[in-house]
Length: 248
Image 1 (cartoon, rainbow, N blue to C red):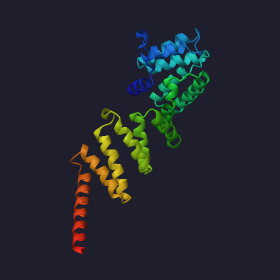
Image 2 (tube, one colour; image 1 turned 180 degrees about the horizontal axis):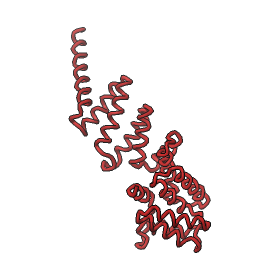
Image 3 (cartoon, rainbow, N blue to C red; image 1 turned 90 degrees about the horizontal axis):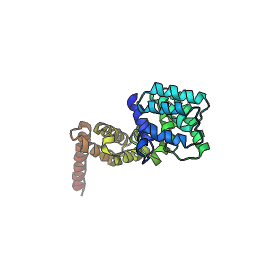
């Protein structure tokens, strides 16, 4: 849970040059206090909540931010953080409610913050994890256009593999391969290409099946399934050539 919280906060942290605002909490609190949603009645609770999130103390952060909301705070930054907190706890229905409220208030504010820009990723991921896969797909695909992160691309690849949409799965896999290799493991790489190879084999598309089996061998030269398919394809190709010569 704590690793997820840290990842969610890091993904959308803004960048400021001032040294005193080097933490996510500092960055976001500075942005909050420069917004029309700032108020001395609830700002201390907002700051305490943001600081708690920085310490990865989700429950304390949510308690402080909830107090600010009860006092009348409608800051989209606060609402977004609450969505992140509930998502990190696995409470996706509540997270979705806060994400939607945050998005509506960002629109009223009219400021293009990183959280606002990343709304499709947050909302789509929470929808997906809550089991609403169909509704999640358009949001995740939109997120992949503007900010193709490894976690989102993996969800899209697997979903399209499951529905046997090889074109979309291949497109998202190509995007994933352009990201730093540290963002996906060799095992994930092999698994995605293996599923694509099997789908193309099932569709009797030998060229595409061969392409993906060969990709697998670049990461796993001992992969039995890929090695067997490639060898059998070569053997069949050789036999076809022999038969052609014999027919001449």
